[in-house]
Amino acid sequence: NDKVDPYSYQPQEAIRILRSVGWDDRDADSILEKDGRKFEFTSYTVEGEVLSTDVLQIIQQQLRDIGIKMDIAVLPFDKFVDQTMRKREFDAIILYYPFRSVFETSHIYWHSDQIEDGLNFSSYKNLKVDHLLDEARLSLDPDRRLAAFKEFQKELHDDPPGIFLFWRNMPIAFHKRYHGIPEKKMESFRDLIHIWVPRDEQRGLVDKDEGL
Image 1 (cartoon, rainbow, N blue to C red):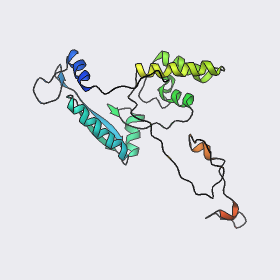
Image 2 (image 1 turned 90 degrees about the vertical axis):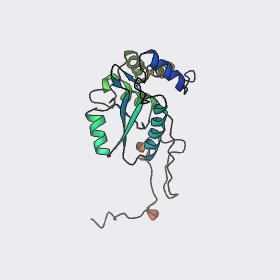
Image 3 (image 1 turned 45 degrees about the vertical axis):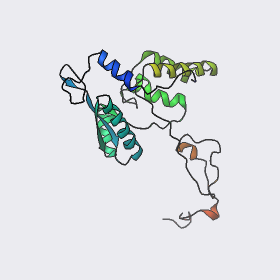
Image 4 (image 1 turned 60 degrees about the horizontal axis):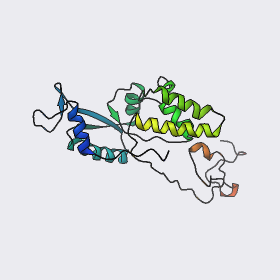
């Protein structure tokens, strides 16, 4: 939806809003507080995700500049999944979402029927979003599907479950002996099922007549 404007970076406006609702630095330690509570939280990321850690460090400094303390916790993948996706014990996380079909992917991440057993581990619930996602996925009219999805984008912008920071293209290289690679785009590894290699160029395979 090209009518949805990205969020602009306005730290002074953020400070104004925070102070208008009672957050202030009362003890001059550069951290905002309200009702005896400091404005501080922890954001989690996965060990080895260098880009995510770098981004968190930038966000950490930007938040510090307006009086918010954000700690960074780097967890091994298994502990990250257990704590954030299974137990859902976290203040904030940074991660990337792999997208396939926009209709399919948006449903599994943001529809409320995916909270209990799906991938909506942020527990985001918006009845209007649910309706629009159902319309976008299930309508047989392509124009209605597109209109519903555009309206869903606007609603997600106005009532965000998180902040979408950037879109990351991840190029994948293949050796020339591989044939059947999708020419225009590849949305997931499921698109690789038709790739094949000529028999005389195959490597490391056991001949079916030789057994194991």
